Image (cartoon, rainbow, N blue to C red; front, side, top):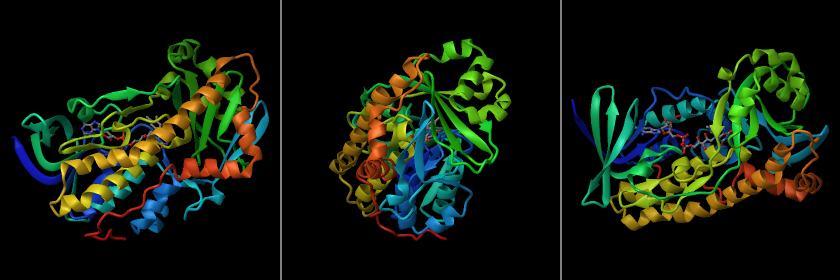
Length: 412
Ligand SMILES: Cc1cc2nc3c(=O)[nH]c(=O)nc-3n(C[C@H](O)[C@H](O)[C@H](O)COP(=O)(O)OP(=O)(O)OC[C@H]3O[C@@H](n4cnc5c(N)ncnc54)[C@H](O)[C@@H]3O)c2cc1C
């Protein structure tokens, strides 16, 4: 049966950007529907980082303490091992923020928490297993809603505003004809888990070996590992066999040796094709794009979730009040890009420099013992630079604060 729903705001995509935007627009009094194509948030690893700036947003929403009661790990320092030499490059303890750490929490717990809070407001609803399949346009230019498929049949949503938050392979941006500028990334990442035993030692996040980089994120009883490879090298790595891969991993991070036998096949390893891109135009009448759908980020610095949340906060600050009181103008939508383009460009610029000047040289020569990259040596010796790097990673460029109307209080 074909049904039609009318709302003020329809959000395509229930990732960090879409769920936070949905919560904030509903909190401002706009009837809001989030459409998510998956049945739940429990999917492949997509990053567990909740940055200090996102924790600040949670505080501004009045739910930080409750949020931090959920199981999570805290990381307050970033350090790396280069040819046996350890460098401490970032210490979040100096941050001008309520939480001076990155919280590691599975993304599905984070999204469950936000949707639980949002669902207590009468203006919010989320539909799972609802896949957006197209946009509805009026007179060839204004977007007035979306078409979706659901288990109950096709669904038409008519809305005053569509928010495209459907990630880096966004259908919405494609259907809207928005052009993407590819910034380029010379690396891909292979993700997997290795069981972990408590050693009581302070474990570095960044491990380098001859021609290899391995990020090891301490997640309690396991390490979430990211093995960085040159773009296009995945088949070659797999072709060498799992034994050779395991050796490369343990040569790079010898402390993983006792548990490495748990990695038995490449089926346990998933490939992330790293992309850095951004839209040239983020809006059209009736539509605004945010998060990865507006700009895919490299995993360098683990800031993609943070930027997605910041975009949602900015979009709600700029648009939810006028949408709620019926004064939203087409020109207002372009303000989101105006506000968020600089942080996006600055972060992508820093990621490209890190990829080209630090990561690419480290993985280029399998015979060379890695030397600490000069930029990191300098940072490790200058506390002011460490504080700047901590602020760049932890708070981002131009951190956003919640200024959108509070028609409903989030229930604690
Ligand atoms: C393997 C991996 C590791 C990562 N690690 C980190 C990390 O450590 N730290 C970090 O900050 N970032 C990390 N990222 C990036 C991070 O996941 C993204 O930057 C962030 O999730 C962007 O949020 P988003 O809401 O814009 O998009 P997404 O999280 O991609 O959410 C988009 C949502 O839209 C849904 N969707 C897509 N199409 C449709 C449709 N047609 N209809 C309805 N729903 C749709 C998707 O199912 C998804 O739930 C990682 C990404 C990957 C893939």
